[in-house]
Amino acid sequence: MRVIIGVLIVVLILAGLAPWIRPYLPPGYDPFAPLSVDDPPTLITRYKLARLGSDPDACLAALNRAREAGRIAFTQLGEMKGKCPLLAPVRVQNFGSVTLSSSFLASCPLAMSSAMFVAQSAAPQAKEGLGSALSRIDHLGSYACRNVYHRPEGRLSEHATADALDITGFRFANGRTVTVLAGWPRDDAAGNYLRSVFNDSCHFFGNSLGPDYNAAHANHFHLGMRGFGVCR
Image (cartoon, rainbow, N blue to C red; front, side, top):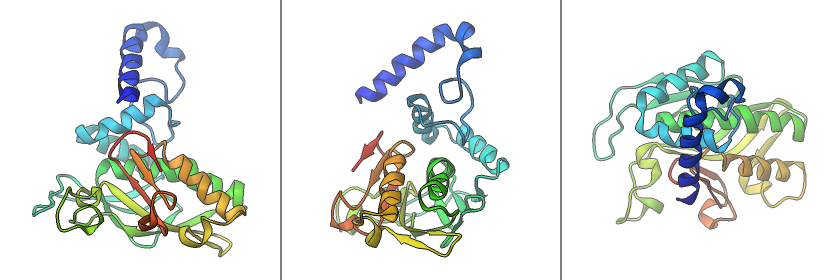
């Protein structure tokens, strides 16, 4: 909450100074510029990401710009009704040259955050840390109409609103596969890659939960939209 209040104060200050300083603000620091998939994850960018959930038109516009830039391919779907309704979901098919183990259903904000995470962290760090291009992301899915931890009672999971993606591993152009379950404990390039991209994910998602959180996450990264910079 303090972080959100701090960002709001910064936005208000910049609003008053906008006519004089806006021409000099670099990408990621202009609170009034449309969100771009290439904006660095500053506090301003994270504030914009957090707001997408309450502004579907702005979110879809940002997602379409990401598609035009070749960072994501998706299909826009209609409203889904039922116990766990979705107002304007999309089906993500790939992140440019990075394919998926299967397409997944996502809220617009989840799709946008995921595209930024892959473009700015998972893909470039593969070349830097492992010497090979990231070719595929393996996952357990996103949308599931259930409560947290499949409990019979309690609050709905982020998966019930297609606001979370569970990533199990990464595949690379040289044929190598790095899984969260096997790679996380290792003190080598694969383990370093996993820990580095997980730490980066905390800047693009409301919450990132990994193997150090609890045994239920030993084999995957849970990347969700609730919260603001929760990283465990």
